[in-house]
Image 1: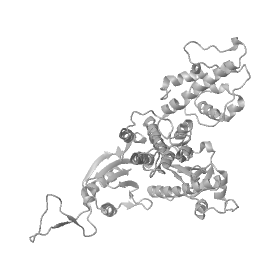
Image 2: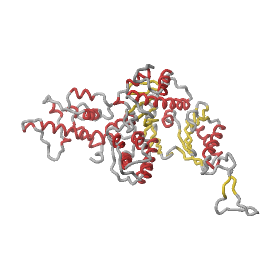
Image 3: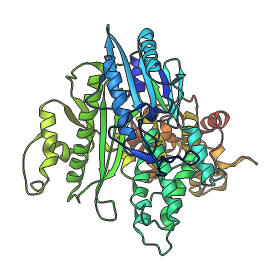
Image 4: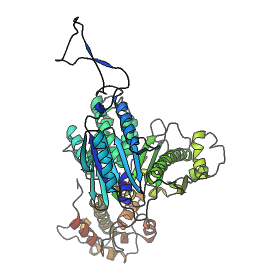
Length: 549
C-alpha cells in the first residue's frame, strides 16, 4: 500500500538503519549476568562478582520490547503519531505535507512528499541514535525495490536465487504452474516414506516468506504445504520442489506499481473451493487492489475453520474473511490519507446465493445454522463499509488462491489481477500463445486431411515445414464444416483470439463456438496477421520458444 501511495502522492522513499538498536534501550528491571570470559574479577573476600545490566543486551527476551518502547517515546516526542490500525507505522503531518515511517525493528522506511520534512526526520533520528542513511529505498528485508519514473517494482530475484542454490535446485527444469492440477488428491494420499523433516521445513519456510512478500501466486500451494510441516511425506517434498522449479521459471516476475490513472479506489475479490481439503474443509481466498490498474496490496489463502455444508456457506465464509481484511485496509488507508472514507469498498464474489444471503437477512432451512459471527457482513453492508457485487467465475481474480489451475489460467489471472501481476508479457506469449498456435494449426491440418476423400483434396505440406506453420484458414470457408472442440479447447482458442486480428486460427471454428470466445479476455497485444501462418511467424520472431519445447 505504501508504494502505491508514494506514487500517487509524489513521495520520496528513503531507508535508514539503526546501529546496535537494542543497546540504546535501558532495561526495565534489575538484571545481573555472569562476567564475560577473560574479564572475570573477584571481590576482596574472593567471592565471584556479577555484572549489572544497564542496557538491553541482545539475547534478552525483553530487549525487543524495550527498544520499541524507547523508539516510540522518541518519535511521539517529535510530533510523529503512531497509527491505530498498525502500531509499526507512524505519520507526521505538517502544513499539508505527510511523512510516513514504517518500522521493522531497526530498519526504517521513510516516505514523504516534502524534502525538508524528510530531511528533518532523518536529522532527528541521527541526533538521537547511531544511524546509517541508506538513501533511496532499494533493498529491504530481502526485497528489491526499483524506482523508474512513475513506476515502482518489487521483486525477490536475489533471494530466490539464494534459496535455489541452498536447496541445490539452481539447475532444475522450470515449471509453468505453482502446482500440478491433482495436488489435492496427492496431498491427501498416504505415503509410507517420510520426508526429511528439516529439509521440508526449511523449503516451506523459505517459500512462505516469498509468498507473503511479493509472490501472491504461491499462496494456495504454500498454504497447502504448510499443513504438513510436522509429518511430511516424500509426496509433499516433491510438491515443494515443484514450487522451487516454478520459481526458477518465473524468477524475474515483479509486482509493478504505477501511478493510478483514475485515482485510488480500493476493491477486492473473494472465492472459496468447497470441500476440497482432505478433511472436507473448504479453502478461502481473497485479494485486494488499491487502484484499478495497480497490483495486489493484500492477499490470503487459508483453510476454513469448519466444514461448510454447501457452496453458498463456503463462499459466505470466504466473503466474511474478505470483509474483515477490507475493514483493516480502510482504516489503514484512512489514517494514511487523513480522511474518513465514505464510499464503500467493493468486494466481488462469484456466488449469487452468498451475495443474496449477505444482502437479505433472511433465514431458511439450509442457512439457519451458519455461525452468527459470519453475519457481521450484513452490518458492514448496511453501514456502507463494503458492498458486494457479482463477478463471473472466469473473471474472479481470487480463483488462483483457492485451487490449482491450468497454465493458461495462471498466466492470465496474473496478468489481469496485478497490472500485470508481474512484468512478463514475453513470458505470457512464450508460455501460452505459441503452443496454442502450434497445436491448433496442427489440429486443423490433421482434421482437413482426415476428412478429404480424394487425394487431390489433401493439403500438401512443403518439405521441412512442420504442420503448425502451415494452416489454411482461407480454404475452410469452402467446406461449410466445423471443427468440434472440447471446453478446454474453446477456452484456449478464446485466449489466443485476444491477441490476433480477425483473420486467425479462430476461422477454423464454427460461428456458435466463436461466439463463446467473445469477450472472455481483453486484448493484451495486437498482432496484425491475415492468417495463422503470419500470426505464428510474428510470435516466433518476437519471443523465444517456451522452455521444454
